[in-house]
Image (spheres, rainbow, N blue to C red):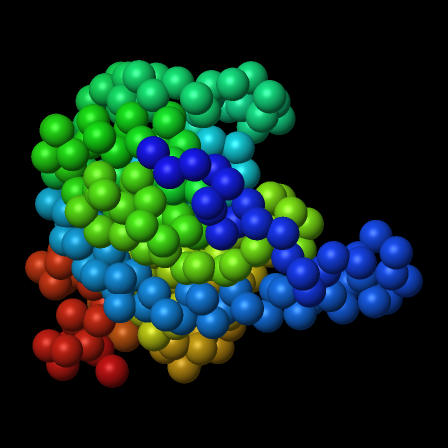
Length: 302
């Protein structure tokens, strides 16, 4: 395993060497200048991100699951992204899962040392009954976190598709994973503080990965999240507006149709566009693979 001293993310950044003596405005300008590099680093990895989306979507369509594995900041970002998928896209909490070193207790206690336990990474996936249909994303800024390496190694042995997400080149996780996504964001504004640029890059990649997979699974129509869970008044109003805009019907009609379809946005859109009741719309959606886009391609809806 490479020495931590050789990692780009651990080196000192000369551009921010005097940050502790700056005015507050200059301080945030320096941090902002560093942050501007993140999107460019992610852009260089777009082909790998697209490959990851296509592989993950294909496996999830066959009943597989997507696991994010991380420790510290990487694990906390995994929890954020995974926890948003059920409410945003109406999927089971089992479809996208975060596996964090130390479990949920590790969210607020990064000093436990669980990230150094290689065996625990594999064991945590074994307890989740990982299979060859699943996808495992090992998230580690350094590319060498033992907990993550143990998880990726176990996943590869099981036959799951493995992805390494890191911020350094030629790392241990890149040698273990079938696919590597490595946005190289350079030295941090504060030496070694990988919650900054590295963490931002990780979140951007996870945003693309989960969003892209859900688009491929038919959870998005146009650019609208048509399988969101309308669990409160704000979201029910958003759902009515969405139905109204997609189907070109008055919002009052959209709200009535939503109620009739038990606030299932996709079903409501299908019912209005097809001019039928919820039961028939559900059947025709199912025949189209639960995809409004597929219905549109068949010419059933505009």
